[in-house]
Amino acid sequence: MLTSADKTQIENFVIKVRNAGSDEQRVRMMALSELSKVHRRINPQTNEPYAPTTNRSLITEYRNIIKAELGENASVLDTFKYSAARVTDASTSRSSARNGTTSAATLSLSNNTSRCT
Image 1 (cartoon, rainbow, N blue to C red):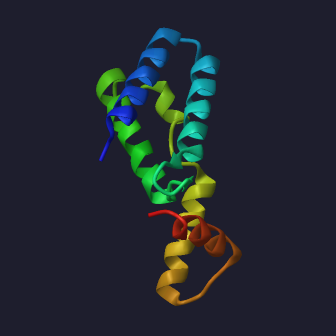
Image 2 (tube, rainbow, N blue to C red; image 1 turned 180 degrees about the vertical axis):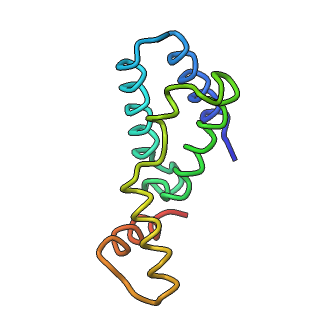
């Protein structure tokens, strides 16, 4: 569920991307900066980083709004996505949970998740 602050942040991002026009390098840097902000957010109730699943949901919401506002083929969507490394970590974690095994990536991911509520 998006908060009003999330909605405002997404709207401001879309405006910046729209104003950047065809400057691909600028759009790419804005997307990377915004993704960094998403992953560095702190939950005000726990003073801990948000869970990776929460961040992934927010990134999905960003992408949905970008598609609605700028179109399905907006170039910013090439950069503004969940990174391959984060997808691999999540996939490894799910696989390990199913198999009852643990890896360093799983421990890292589970440590991040366990601190967040």
